Length: 251
Image (cartoon, rainbow, N blue to C red):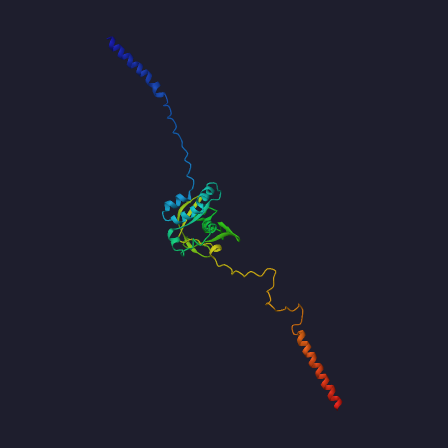
């Protein structure tokens, strides 16, 4: 009997507590920690390595230290950069000795002529203002290229020596765009026709006279006889006058 009463009291107690338990709000689950991912800094070498057919351009960039310079500038630039990357086949199609004929500084200029200090998406090339300035410059100012959109939404790039179509975008996110080209963009300033070199004039000296010759004084009449010839002419004149006088006496 006592056992039944204890059981009944326990059930009553549970029933009394049930509404209170149901009214309690479940504790909110802890908020998930938010993590911000910083986008990877643009690296032109990594982009070209992924493309797998730009080893010669990478080698030229490395030998001229333009890869490290571009990576440093791209990470701190507001305007961004655009790179025209020639394929290995583009370098193979150059005349033998083309690169070896360039000085170290000219090789730097060749690489910089493939870099534009402005980010261009494929769409923004449609409204680019020509000529487009590159990173390279010389005595006559910056090296430039002309960018022309075609009717089928392709883009031509021209240096005045070479013209080619813009190829695949290896990267097109600001601040760095990298586009494949199938020709090396030879700058007009380096590979264009050179004006003929004039022979240097003699400094401070007139052409020397032949040994033994006496130069005539400035302003002298070149047709005037020399001293010996004048004497001979005077003698003949005197002799002719004497003959005329003798003939007159005989008459």
